[in-house]
Amino acid sequence: MNPSLNKPIKNIACIGAGYVGGPTMAVIAQKCPKIKVTVVDINPQRIADWNDEDLDKLPIYEPGLKEVVTEARGRNLFFSTDVDAAIKEAQMIFISVNTPTKTYGKGKGMAADLKYVELCARQIAEVATDDKIVVEKSTLPVRTAQAIRSILDNVGNGVKYQILSNPEFLAEGTAIHDLHNADRVLIGGDHHTPEGQAAMDALADIYAQWLPEKRILQTNVWSSELSKLTANAFLAQRVSSINAISALCEKTGADVEEVARAIGSDSRIGPKFLKASVGFGGSCFQKDILNLVYICRSQGLSEVADYWEQVIIMNDYQKRRFAENIISTLYNTVSGKKIAFLGWAFKKDTNDTRETAAMYVASTLMEDKAEIHVYDPKVTEEQIISDLEYLSSLNYHNLRDKQIRTQIHIHTAPYTALENAHAIAVLTEWDEFKSYDWRRIYNAMLKPAFVFDGRNILNAKELKSIGFKIYQIGK
Ligand code: UDX
Ligand code: ADP
Image (cartoon, rainbow, N blue to C red):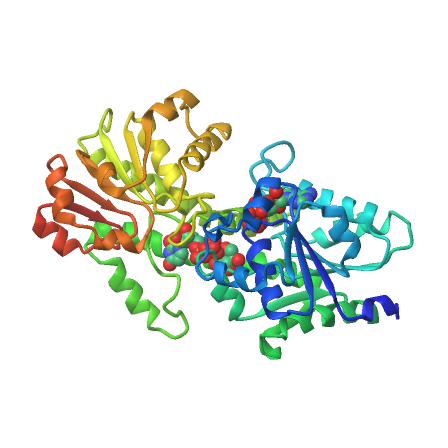
């Protein structure tokens, strides 16, 4: 066996200080005080934000993250732009860079763009002078480990690598809780060789510092990679399934929450992930399913591909249905009308807006010439504009950049966003929306005062008694 792979891990590097790399490494550093953890990123602003004395400036918002960073930063947790130095020093390197859906060429709109992962592998190959364990942490298509291995093994400078797959299952908004209490940790590696097994055990030892060993599962690399895609596909499928039923409820007079409660009481189905909504968002669900669909098609499994693609088609339908209901309820046009959005993030307790339903609903309404006024407690104006410009780049809508800037208005307080509105649309389930003074809001709105609750969080009975006309999903 190669002795260097059997040494205890003293230094970890993580390439990519984003939503996955940042919180995951912060928790590893917190729980393993003897290991030095260095998180590196090519984006200097991101690193400066991670290093900011003012913890409110951390680049991502996650409940509990500040406390973990306070405990570990400067002790054994470091953030830096010096990627080469971190690679050189580490025995174990996590790759945690972004893997967006390709926006060009072969697999456009479907396959994951692996260029950032590939660049990382090349940089490791160039810089490393001793043996390394390389851990893929980003969500990647099945067989990416093979690509990383082929880059690393073909450099020929005698350095030996073990490639592990260790997918992240944390959900945003509960990342720290999910990391502290993971249902399972998955480690995929080559358990047929002593070096492979040693690498898997080295990573398992890290997680065993705070998780029971029975929750740390070891598999082959391909099973680990595919399990990540499959877990997200199953979760997204549940949301699309209940959303499909919500459309039927609206036609028949059934109540989707009652249906969800009834079916969720069956212990085989279970109660989680059955909340009907305006549509799922986030960086993972759509991307991972598109990826799964792409892999199936490239393996000639067209029925399997079609099956999973339907989850996305249903989600697109749900977002469109919500926007079209607003237009038809407001007498078939929203031209020049003020539509107030409560929430823009793809779910509560995060400032992440990737694939948020809000941007799709906004662009449908803006194409019908609506004036959109947004209030979200955590999302910035620049982000909202850049989301709409991103949809322009995909030709999702025909709005010009100038038009976007004149039709969207971002507010830093809720009541100004809602004043004189023709309608309110709830896009994110932030808790604070429930406790607003809805009578005051009603008095300040144009009548009839319409509310479209895309998250079913408002008290419909109470709002109706105030005078609102309220529409909820699946009711
Ligand atoms: C997801 C997976 O849960 C996580 O394991 C994986 O690592 C990354 O992808 P995340 O995208 O952070 O996590 O959010 P999640 O809580 O899963 O929600 C995804 C979307 O589905 C959100 O837009 C959410 O609002 C929506 N959703 C979720 C529903 O509409 N209804 C539900 O019942 C649950
Ligand atoms: P995720 O949700 O997967 O964590 P993010 O986009 O939040 O994705 O974070 C990925 C981070 O990886 C970004 O901050 C980006 O700057 C960084 N990154 C991408 N490529 C490289 C690279 N070659 N070296 C270092 N950092 C990189």
